[in-house]
Length: 198
Image (tube, rainbow, N blue to C red; front, side, top):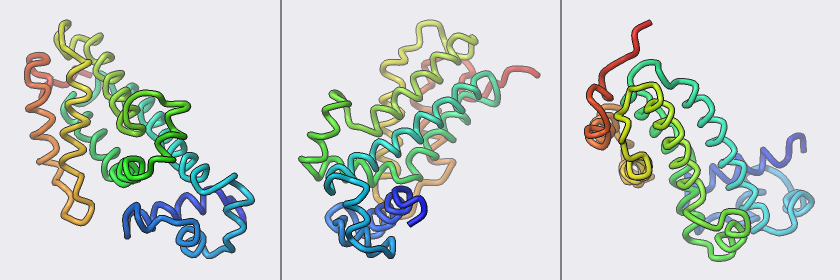
């Protein structure tokens, strides 16, 4: 298989989104990918190793999103940028990956070897928002005393709750924006509406 790892990851995501963590087995993944079961075991020591690599690969996507979000500091509005970031994180596979992590003890134990604190994916998303908020604070678009250590996890927690029902209708952009405005309201005058002049 060409790009077998990515094909297997994408197949796992489809199964996870369609049927949930309990349906995610090596047979389900290889059937979804249209390949023999042995292909998965050629690339990964076991199924938990495959799942751990899937999570780490999706964390790497958040790291790339973090770079783009930090680069957006000083443009648009803080609230719009945060709304876009939360939507990108939670419209992706993130909610399903969190469900996978919390439902599999062996996977959690394996991930703890390199990520000893927090829930993987949510922890990285929180770090992403904290980095962005720090950049906006440095630019004067948030108050100098804005509590980023509280704002970032509050935004992630609220975003996760908005998107948590994978079988329901996802929240509208307006709903996400209202939550963001509410959370950052005390972080600085105009954080939700003020754009830096060109």
